[in-house]
Amino acid sequence: MANRRLFEGKIKLQTAIIPLYLVSKLCCLNAFIYLPLKKYIVRGTERRHFIAGDSSFRRPTGKTLAFSCVGLLHAVGCSLGYVSYHILSSLYQSSKLTDSNLVRVAIDLKNQYIGCILVLSLVTVSLYRQPALSRLIHVLLQIDHNIPVMMQAVDRTDPTPTVVNNVVWLRNVLLMLVLGVGVKAVLEISNCLMYIRDSGSPFSSNCLLLCIVPQTLCVISELQFVAYALLIRDRFRLLNRWLVQLQPNLARGSEAAFRSVHHLAHIHGQLLSAIGLLNRCFGVQNGILLLFQFVTLVELGYNTCMMSMRYAEANIQQGDSAEDFLETVYWIVWFLVEMFALCYASHSTVEEARATVHLLRPPFTYGMNQRTHFRMISQQQLVFLNLKTSISCGGLFAVDLTLLHAIIGATTTYLIILIQFDQSFNGD
Image 1 (cartoon, rainbow, N blue to C red):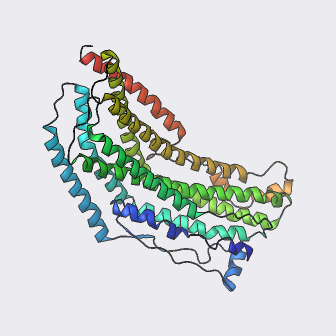
Image 2: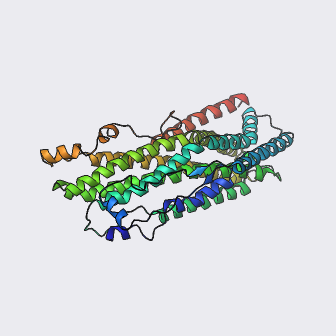
Image 3: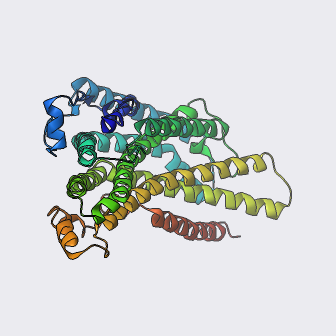
C-alpha cells in the first residue's frame, strides 16, 4: 500500500501532455487527434500480477494519435494561406528597399523570405513525422506503466518517493512557452527581425505579422523537442536513483532486488528506443532550427560589428544607432539562449542514459555468484551496454554542448569573412 500511494495524487502523463498537444495543434505542427489512454487501476487479483512481475499485464495498447482529415486541412490550409500572404507582402516591401551594399542586400532578401520557408518546412516535416510521434508517446506511456512493476518487486523501507513528477515537468513547459513567445514578441515590437540593420529599422504595418508567425512556430517546434527530451531524461534519472537505492540489497544478494533490476533493464531498453523515436520525430526539425539560428546569429553579429566600426570612425552618435545596437544585442543573446536550451536538453538526456549504463555494471565488490547472477538478469543488457546513445539532427551531427561551442566558433569565423568582404567591396 505504501508503494501504491507513491503514485497517487500525481498528474498522469497522458493528461500532462494535453497542453503541449493543444499548442502544437493550434500552430499547425500537429494535425492528428490525441487519444488519451484510459487509466489503469490496480486492485484485487490484478495487483498480484504486478507483484509477480508480469510487466505485460494490462499493458497500454492502441494508438495515441489518430489521423484527422479536419486537422490535416487546418494545418495545410493555414500554412498555405500564410505563405501566400507572406510572399505578396514581401514582394511589395522589396520595392521600398534601396541599398548599395551587397551584403546587406543579401541579408534583406534572406530575411524577407525566410519566414515562409520556415513555416513550410516545419509544418511539412512535423506532419510527415506524426506516426513516429505517436509511437514515442505510446512508449513513454508504457514506461510509466512498467515503473510501478519495477518498484513493487522490492519491499521498500525508504519513505523517500521515487517517482517522476509530471507536475513539475508541465510547469516548466508552460514557463518555457510563455517566456519564449513573450520575449520574441517584445523583441519584434521593439526591432523587427526581418528588417533589423545597422542603419535603422523601417516601419511596416505587416512586418510584425510576417515575423511573429514563423518565430512562434520555431519556439513551439523547439519546445516540443525539449519537452519530450526532458520526459525521457526524468525517467532515466528515476532509474538512476532507484539503482542507487538498490545497491545495498544487491550487495546482499537479494532476489527481489535482482528481479527489480530485471524490470529496470527492460525499461532502460524502452527509453533507448524512445531516444531513437525522438531523433526520428525532431531530428530534421532541429537541423532546420539550428541552421536558421546560426545564419541569423552571423547576420546579427555582422550588423553589430558594422555599427561599432562606423560609430568608431565617425566618433559621434548618429540617430538611434546606440538603441538599435542594444536591441540587436538582445536578439543575439536570445538566440544563444535558444540554442543552449536545445543543446543542453539533449546533452543532459544522453548523460543520464550513460549514467544508467554505468550503474548497471556489477561492482567489483560483488562476489562471483552475485556478479554471475547480475549478468544473467537480462540478455538485453549485452545489447544496450555497448550502444552509443546520442541525439542527432537526422544522423548528420550530434546535438550536445559540444555543438554549441562549434556554432560559436563557426559564427566568429564567418563574421571575420563577412567584415573583410564588406570592407573590400566598399573600397575601405
